Image 1 (tube, rainbow, N blue to C red):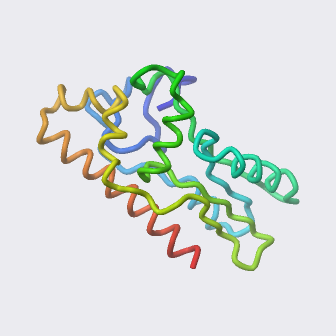
Image 2 (spheres, rainbow, N blue to C red):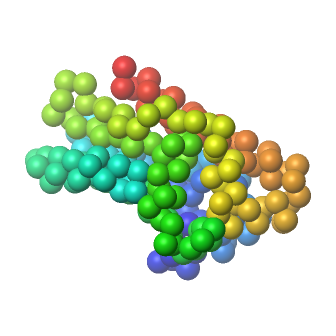
Length: 174
């Protein structure tokens, strides 16, 4: 969801997330903006989360700046609308946890390289995925709203969507 639009869901919002205009939880998979950008083949693309890997974030910004062409950096940055347990004081830890569980993946796609895609995060520990979701009110509220069984189905879909995105990146990096 995006604070600058009043907390509404977008096509890049994860499945199961509750937002102002997705009060019942978003039902569809998020649009993979990085994959769309990389498909063009000539756009420097990176996914970063400063709390997970500050050095990778700086490297991505330097590479993007030095690239003579279009660049896009997708930064995972928690916001107040996520309803993070403990508030935004925990945003660095939340970013680290997001990467460790597979909610987001760190990578750099540099068209100047022979093998342009580099995955900078370790293989996720998918067992921690649901715990990550339940650390945020935008997911936790789904249990009260839809019931445990329906929420679990939505969370499973969110995880499966994330695994599919990760597996596509791994295949593309080979």
